[in-house]
Image (cartoon, rainbow, N blue to C red; front, top):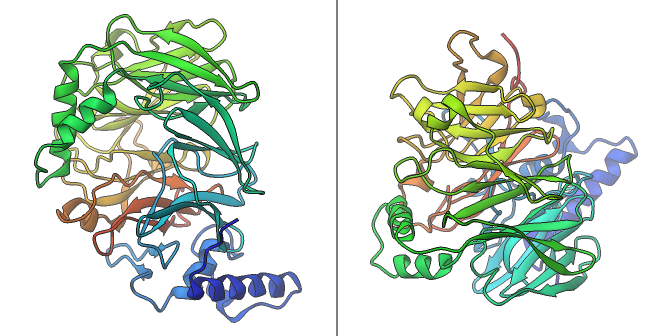
Length: 446
């Protein structure tokens, strides 16, 4: 099994391992004197990376505006990245995080130990649609028509199945059921061909325009879209739902608590055609329902994702300048407003919900918002729905650098809720994985 060979990181991993051993024997290492600002006073792996590289301004610094600690989680790579914001990257035990790293054209999957800060390469194979099944402690990815499982402890790669040609090439990411028995994905006819056609055009200076061109082109093309499941143990492919109205399907996600439920979307944007995108799928019966009905249907929503309770869903309501929470059992929606009227300057693209739903982080990128934002739900005004917002990290280098490889940051919260991790190019033109510390005051009430 290949290992991470950068010498400085080998020294760092050895230092961190020694520090962990000393702590276990009651001997505090010198760098443990600086306590993190989160709830825990025991240094975690990211704390230890900070302490190891705090004198290197290319890897560690404090945001000039917020004072929050910001660090690149791994030096010595040309590029680093995490998957889409609702694609899990952590084990259930909270000890490992999977990411993609590259040296030149050589890519591989790497693990960050969230307890010690050590990094090791787990695979020199990479693919599409990466997601971690937390209790199985494995990652799922595909290469073309072939689907693979990667054991995060042993590094063993197992071929699961070969699907019908082209289904995964046109797919929109893997979801999985709560019992981790099934993979879920949407097949979107001509999706890849349309993307290649649009991206072959001369690149605009603003990468967001490329996305608009793509959606406009896609809306004009005939589609035959469907949802599928893959039985992970049996290696069987099963059709779940076929859309007869030529809607572009995506964002398939299994409920984190109910193995029979999933959500997906009829993709689209408020500026195009589809507003009420959210759908609920019963995996047992194949029945599809539309949970947002009545007046709620008039609001344009985007970036839908499950709450941890598996019974409610979050989404952005750009037309209302708010993040919405919908209880699927009662149909009651609660809004957490980050703007008023046409003021949506604190809007984000993707969100991650903090401990007990008392706060959230968002990665900016909308209406001139160049900040990683902290949304204080616990201090919501009951009359207006407005929530206080704190700026944690300036994303201007990501959103304003026209020479950089653009990618949306897609925030992921560590299992202990102390750090938010994301992909960005805060230094230079290449994407890296960064961590920003969540303040200890996050979630405090009025």
